[in-house]
Length: 373
Ligand SMILES: Cc1cc2nc3c(=O)[nH]c(=O)nc-3n(C[C@H](O)[C@H](O)[C@H](O)COP(=O)(O)OP(=O)(O)OC[C@H]3O[C@@H](n4cnc5c(N)ncnc54)[C@H](O)[C@@H]3O)c2cc1C
Image (cartoon, rainbow, N blue to C red; front, side, top):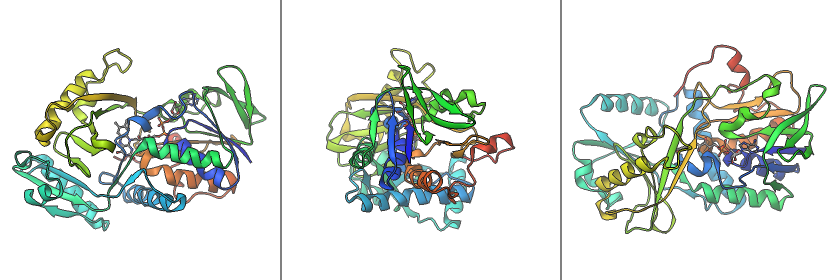
């Protein structure tokens, strides 16, 4: 079967790899190659702490485990860090009560959580300043992991290409339709590519393709940013979520940093100085937690709009009345990408319904949808 995958983010690359592994002839189309999208900006933390209801929590948990299985299948999971993660927050506040409700919910699902004191945190991460832990409650999530998304999508694409996949650097302009069936795509340069099936994995741009079909996935506009630091003296080895900043070790002594307050500075993401104010905030916040990285230099600011369906839940599946076409768009897409690849094989190649995504169909937006966080 010939399949066109629109978009080469984490989801498109995973779909391409899984389909190619099962013998499909795959063409991936993305104007930016492997260089863009929410996948590049992502914090890429494999966790499921805020996922509810339980069906959604279980789905994301399976996605996180599927990264390990994918690593074993490919032979070397060099995009994964299986280190667990740390989180701490001020005790005796309304937020602490919210955290307690969240931890109780996670425990009721059987999720492993270890309660730590300041000494425990510092023994795991010796660079963390004692003052940043003062008056805080802290936990360790042993099953959490993190993904290097640059490595992840290159590995998936390399493995897909070894099985005959082509990556074309072009933008899909519209779908080709014949008698209610999608039979290919037209590119911006007017050339046409034919296929037996098309899957749209264009992230936050998903509705820019296929608008003529009269279906759109309602998305929220949620821009986000991360920054990368220069090489610095640090011993950070796992993801840490301190009260105002998210810290993740990258290769060669770099840190990838994220703060919700910095996202709020993103009013116009196309402005020439977009992200600069947020980057300054992040640089100040990280020094409170990790004084040893003093004078941190930001070398890259990454900004993108999260692919965020309006009810916060994944969207995967065909559209009603249209043959030969699937859509796949979700937040937590790094976590879920291996499962979406597997589901694409089930549904597109074998015509079976994916158990993982039967609750998360695009058709739900024509009815009242459950809300989620
Ligand atoms: C700040 C931030 C933090 C995040 N943290 C996490 C986290 O901790 N854990 C987690 O699991 N997820 C996280 N996410 C979400 C996650 O990154 C996304 O869900 C995931 O990257 C989505 O992947 P995707 O392949 O759907 O989309 P993208 O990575 O956006 O890829 C879509 C691709 O489609 C291409 N495209 C667009 N239009 C067209 C067209 N017309 N033709 C062809 N190609 C097209 C684009 O160029 C792009 O490369 C975070 C996101 C952000 C922004």
